[in-house]
Image 1: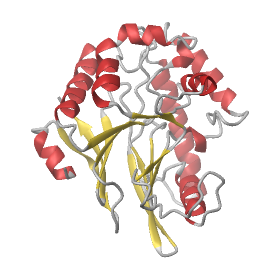
Image 2 (image 1 turned 135 degrees about the vertical axis):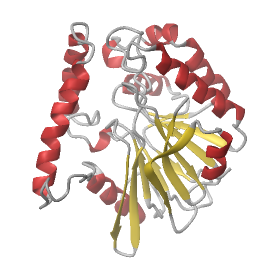
Image 3 (image 1 turned 45 degrees about the vertical axis):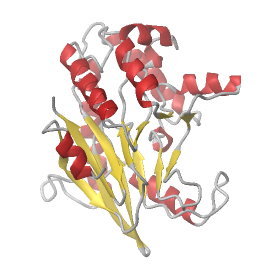
Length: 305
């Protein structure tokens, strides 16, 4: 199924988000890949940013999953991490399963996705790993899945590039502590996380524009991605076989992430190839974006139903 066919089958419910669609020189996937970004499922309480005090957000996502189940032939789902909001549940997944039995049932039993670990649900991965079974949960994933073909895309959550949230580094404790504090503050004001996030984004945007030699006046739509250089460098290392976890050099051109909750699709040439970073957005605070990859094409779509 092509991306065009996927959109047509949705009967107007799926569309390309902000014209974020591109095509690589060679195939990236053997079939249709759907990448679901951050969900942060919690307990329907004030800190539940997926529910966001509006049951229509749950209904929309359920209809999205129903559509995927109805078109699952040659389709594979990859959940890009932070499906659970474990930082605010004291690692208790039972709270989430009690709040979202239908959604988790469709995900686990009908779609059978590959789960990429996020910084907010890494505790599940680490606990299962210590038991000797990760239940299809991975630190990162590659496409195509065919072992006889060179890898063309790397998929991971994105916290790995974030100094304050890298759970493989000491600095990750900073972001975790701040998130837990904000989670408690949401009981006083459910929108406190959105307010603080916007303030932080404005601060980061100013530094990014300044450091890149641009001005906000000349470039009002400047949209560089804070993690793009990290992923270009990472893909280049894999392509030359300079990493420890891959025996053969890859042919990576696309990095697919989530984590920032802001959908973006950026391209940049380096050497003889063009590298892409596709940030698939989120399903929190009313977000409804997701990534798709089919053959050479890849895009960020949004679900409106």
